[in-house]
Image (cartoon, rainbow over all chains, first blue to last red; front, side, top):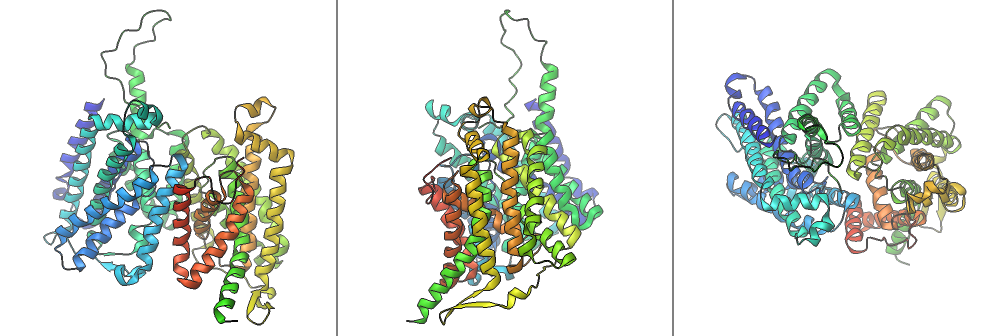
Length: 333
Length: 293
């Protein structure tokens, strides 16, 4: 099952590299850039939310810090790409600070705390007008001067590929197993010697780095940012929904989620005009009620049910299956 | 006496006036989130619905919101009841995040529905009371509608407190919160009681919206700021404590007004969240409520 997921993603991402040669319009490429950007953000969220089970609704903080970092560092005269690097570092520092407070909380308190941090950052960005420009906004340098739209698209695909490879690697590492152990039962994980605080913090740092990078790319694409755009709760929600829709804690989930959600958003935007968020809401409700494991999660569960041999009668010894255990999909607390 | 003292007193008075409305919103959320542990992100949308209901009724009949606010309450009670029975009951026992997503989705539907029907414009209503000011001493003045909203909100908050702490229904709701497995064994219909409690909590938001209408402005996303504030109040007041949330509401009102006075209006909301993070990390049992339901 895992091999298939990796193979599908590899073929998909490889094919995606050639899309600009086929699609002529900049508009389509911009939408596709958004698809890959949110796939990467969803993959980043998945490390913390899916594998470690820490359901953050404050990833806009790292996204916004990445975006504002690029804008503000380059305003100081630092070259754009160095600014991106610095922005990512600042996003990671923010993650360390936010994580050290919020990871002490569990369940809804954790979620609310991540929201509160992101909101505080948004309000600070709004109110410190002499630094960030406040609601007036701030200019962001263009990262690619040569055929920018295509370059942004490719960088989006590369970011997704990077996040995906990182996830594949982490999923099978000792660190990844720590994260999943924490998700399934934090107290048991602690009792067998998993350093839960440190593992969660590392997952968040990696996640924040990718998210910050994504934020910087996004900002540079728009050339101009305001707090309500890059630090809004809508960004946090969209990132989480992309991952949940596809299937949290699965490899392919965020990729599928982003493709489905962003294309649905685009179609609805054209058909329903102002009410497209209404459809968005309906989509969320439907997923929660009928597909809590997400699209990929549900598919994997159905397929693994098909593969399973018929149940042996009670009393017969159970043979160890040669088939690899399907990964745990449901996020339990 | 110096001017600074009058300014301070005025800010505290204003804070209490806003705080009473916060208290009503916060108590509704305390019942839903504090007692029943339902992380309701649609609370703000319910408040918005209450405001629009009152607005439509006022435009149609001209009856002052102060007489027709029960309509919003009754309507929102049924909306809350239906939300619990139709949606939340199906995912009880799942991770809180699912509840958050579900109520968020519902809020999106309601807010965008309102935008579709009423447009994104800001509205305000004009009632004769609005031009009246009451003066205390020479320097402090109170706008009359704020005072009426304050009085009604406090009375309703008292009634809500009585219902939760003194009636058989309130006892049942708190029993479920204490032990969801033992409560049905004692003959409590868990879903029925929780649906009614969710309805009452939503009605509190709806009524608060109705009382807010004369003194505030109205637009589809008006509820968003109150939604996050209501979580702040519940945590500040201590989970499960109805009176704690009420006190937290009043305190929040005063803190916001003092922040506006000394640092500027734009920092008020940021102070709310900083307070929230501090309480969550330093004293998670809350400041104002010792009793846990």
